[in-house]
Amino acid sequence: MEPKLAFCAEYKYPPELTDLLLRIVQAADGKVVRSLILLGSTSRGEFSWHSRDGRFLPLSDIELLVVTHDHFSSRKQRDMMRRWEEIETSTGVDSPSFHLDCSFLNLRKLRALPTIFRTFETKVTGKVIAGENLLSEIPDVSLETIDWRDLNEILIWRLWSMWLYMPLQFIDRRGELPPDLDRAFAYVIARNLLDLPSWLLPRAGYLLAGFGPRLRKMTEICDELPLCKQMKGELLPLLDRCYAIKMGREEPQGALALYRQACRAFRLCWRELAGGQPADDHERPIKRNSRKLFVDWHWRRKGHEVRTILKNLDHLWLGHSMLWMTRPKYGPMLNLLIRVHQAVEQHLDRNEDEAADDLEAAYKHLRGFALHDSVIPGWSALLFADKVANLRRVFLHFMYDYFPSVAAKKDYLENLL
Image (cartoon, rainbow, N blue to C red; front, side, top):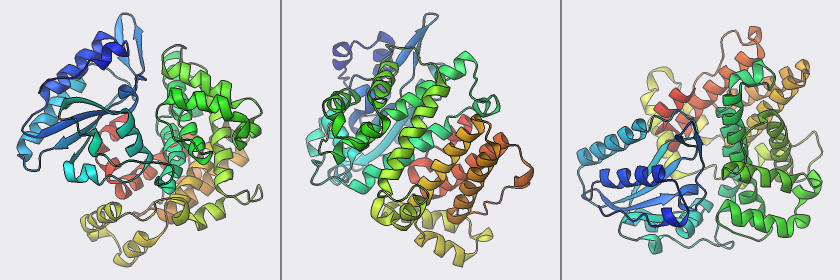
């Protein structure tokens, strides 16, 4: 397939990235691929990388939307995926932030993409790097048509990402990390904080693509946003620093301080989502209104749930499985994630009783919505860091059961942990 990579020079990307994208295009099979669309920060000129000891070290994912022909050989698709995996491995990059992420659909499904934030950014900033330009076929998304419940899921995915990539040494050593780990975790925190404007700005009437444009708008209207008022001048400098880290203008460091600021910001968003309830009563409205606040019922996920249950019928009680399918999960998931991070903060401050209480509450949330038996053997006798690690692993197995997109990345995530 003919590569279309002129934007790399426009964005002043390093030649190593241009070469990597070229190899991906060359490995694509034109009998499978109708259009190869680059998504995410790489398509917007916001790809992150560092150069250390003369080596190119990518920090951003490379996200691809592969629009296929209606009829193609599944063997050819598998061969193409194998070639892409070999290209990813050949980079020699051992970073949890770098991964080649591919999604497949045909033209009919492209035209039927849901009106969510990701669809908006794909249409506005996606780059066709090979094949037909089908961006015009993607549905338009506006403030009037966007799915607000999907937008709220940003909070869940960002909090989950911070927990997923948290080194256990961060807990064991109460925030003191070796330089390499500190840099890696500081980058993860900065990247997740940069999605706060993605959630805040549409609520204020602005739908924008890209971290840079959203931060500029935040600067203009910050006084109008409740979160800015609550953080009293702390939010904009924090987000500016995160963007400098993302763009490689500032070395990622100081993970502990960044983590504390991130926890505070996300906790305030959680309280806003709860509807301004008293300080001790945020979890109940989040759980009670789960289906109003989030896309808690989706046909594709329900199909995945049915397949998961059928695969595990030999050790699942059918009645429990049916109850699990109907139970709201997003609200309890958000409450669990808030509690986990709150527990870690308390542990960092040596408030062990409060940390234990928060982690116990998180464990209780998980046991309320997990499909499989989520009892962690010897829970009460485990050290705090071991409890966090075990809880994370059990939660990840719930994610495999519930989200097809997470189940598809199981090998990568298992290696990560």
